[in-house]
Image (cartoon, rainbow, N blue to C red):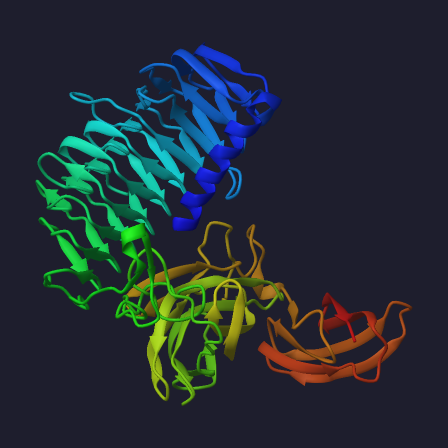
Length: 560
């Protein structure tokens, strides 16, 4: 984040040099609407208030200057969305402080991105220097907090809140009691990710972070050079720290720390105690050098770094250009093929496996997609992210599928993919499942679904029913094609209620017969035939199924 901080400084100098091009806008009291760069700087001359059901939008390039220790109370929404090279500044003149944002019982969510917050001061008794949140929500990302003070949580104090605190830098903030940067209490779902906390201080506990009866997840943060103990969790907190670096400051007490580099050592899976090898810590550059022990040392189950490698420890991953993961091969096959689900429903077991070649390791996601008899798809389902596989190794899971009686009859394709969801597919495999039509009449309220069990989870997948609205399925035909569109071969799946003479014919749009695939007596139930259009021109064709007095038409699209 050294670069980001430089951008803030350059941007602020640019503002000083060019401020004469803009007109000052004095603000106080109730505010909403738009603060744009043309009206910047906004000079705050009294307490500010955003009412409920109101929105204040602050554009990139805006500077907000508080003339005194005024508070900014928000009952509505503030959207302060800056840009990486055009940030938003909340600041004061030299020697002046301001009173921070106040959120109380606010169910709406405000967002702050690419902002700089400095010189907020609510000490000696105030909680939350820049942000005070009570039963409220906020998203703060890609922002810097510097030179702020409070009794607790100089950057943010949150109680019974829901906070997303990501990609932020907190430095040179101080408090009297706990949490030099952040202080969270009773937050069930808050997250702190990819943040740097350095040179913050507390007069008592948690030079950087203090959690009280909190259940927050802290992922890939760098906590260095803060007053000790830098982190303190108390009063039943179950907050977890994963893929973090704690260096040049001591730990206090934490519920769980794993896959982290902790100076002095700390019990936990994957933890190390080695110099993280920062680029230039004396000048606040906490990126990793090429020889850092934190590279590829994070939790293998965490999402891969952007370069495709195993997650690093700390806020900044070390880019490994040219990394080529191992080649993967997907395998998916029922244990007892072929799989035919009877009219009353049933189960089958199958194995899904991914194999990596000998060239390198790979990090990948796995997910499923089901192609229905009508050609539509259901998915992604059963998504498993961040799987690590070593060169030459295999990852295999045996799974169970139950299909209810009332699922649409016909041919299903169960596809399994390995890749970087949702951006790319590395490899895939599929198998066929036939579902026979249920007997009797079917009402609209009867469930049609599948259950996939295994891999420590059971997931329910809703499927279309055999025939809704009480249609008598003993006197119905079903016809579907897959794939559709196709080139040049498609599979036609169909179900007839009873044995009898059945005809399946392909027509063009002029009504001319292209080919007759079936014209004979067959048994009742599910069947499948292939249609090869390699000798035909691209276009629309019609498949007509006839059995007894019943008929069904399927539209086919051939694309070459």
